[in-house]
Amino acid sequence: MKKNEWIPVRKSHLKYYENIELFYKSPSGNIVLYKPVGMPFTDESIANKPFIGDLYIKPEDKSATLEATQKGFNEQLIKDIQNKTLNEVRDSLFNVVDETLAQPRAGGLKAMTGTVQSIVEGFSSQKGIIKNLVRISYNDYTTALHSINVMALTVGYCYFTGKSTKVTEEYALAALLHDVGKTEVPKNILTASRPLTDEEYNQIKAHSSLGADILDGYKEEPIRKAKVGALEHHEKLDGSGYPHGKTDITECGRILSIVDCYEAITNDDRPYRSAMQPLKALALLKEDMEKGKFDRSIFTDFAYSLTDFK
Ligand SMILES: [Fe+2]
Ligand SMILES: [Fe+2]
Image 1 (cartoon, rainbow, N blue to C red):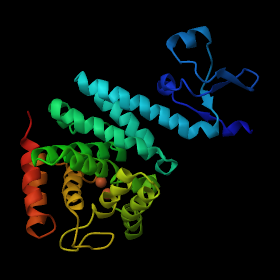
Image 2 (image 1 turned 90 degrees about the horizontal axis):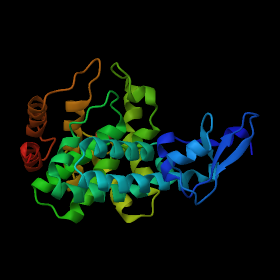
Image 3 (image 1 turned 135 degrees about the vertical axis):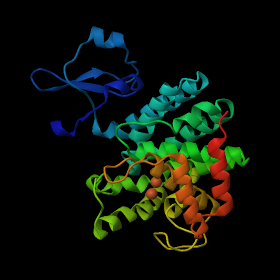
């Protein structure tokens, strides 16, 4: 095997890799086994066997590694929600979503079902924690962060309108994965700090269909159901949306179109466009609702759900 095929792993994830072989580079440049399968990785193991540089995994262990990380994160998330520690919830969630969205075609989205279940379950007992997730502000506004915020707002809306746990989990998962297609749009276009050309805008618009295509690649039912969110969240009831200009939009699509716009305009601060205050953003969305782009009753309930902090 060529040296460049070995994959370095993040140090913060090592504790999840009990059942993964880890390797390191010896001073002479050879790849040597650091830890066999079945041996936990603890601070003591580093003290007993110091290493310089990165630890590596074999390429064929890549998806097993992602699964181990997700499992560890999901367990951590449940503990953090129970312990009401907002910063930890935020960090666990951001890590797991960021890691998973980085390679959605590798099968990793499966674990998102468990993530969403923890959040929805946590919401009923620790409402404040989940609601406050939307106030997270990171320096770097990424798709992972936006997706988490859209999910948290969607859970808040579903809770406010009395949706069942099953429907809430379904819509929350669709919310978390609605922009997964953006992982296949060039990053320089996504983060451009200037208005886009028509061609660039078309590349961005392709994320709806790309997302649906990624989700279509899964055989798991909850992930396949989330496809509707990816496909419809930029559709508008008056037919002015994309990718199909549909007017017959599912409830999930109608909710996400509102929540997605609201989240983006209140949080996405760019050099040519500042993030807006909630009331101003709602006023702007209301104008679009009056023009027939958004569902009136969903919009009204969503606006009220934002004030429903307990
Ligand atoms: Fe989108
Ligand atoms: Fe979005």
